[in-house]
Image 1: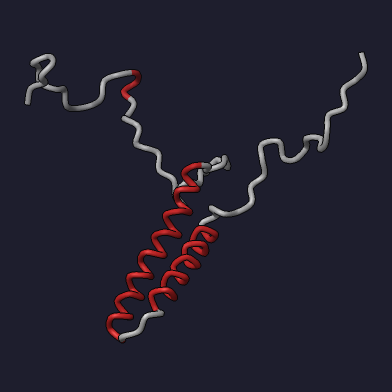
Image 2: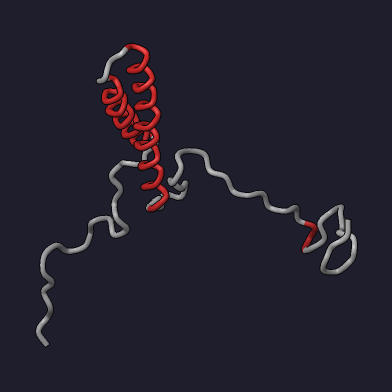
Length: 120
């Protein structure tokens, strides 16, 4: 197949370049989404992961409760399913380390209270 820009066939074979190094594969991390392996704060991604665990749990278990309500002719199992899903979402996010207390960058060594400037 020819390239549109150059009209030449793409080069296949060993990668040419500095010292014929192989192409780097994408970096993958094991563990929970939003938690980096270098210890930095996950921030936005961790918040989205917690939100998705909780909302996903509520949706899934509410649908299960709704199905059981229709099957058995009750009206309360959907609410129990929603509560179970929320609790399960919190549990999963806690077990993945997304809701743990993290220290700030200064580790709490900053002085507390108003600053006391020196007289000049």
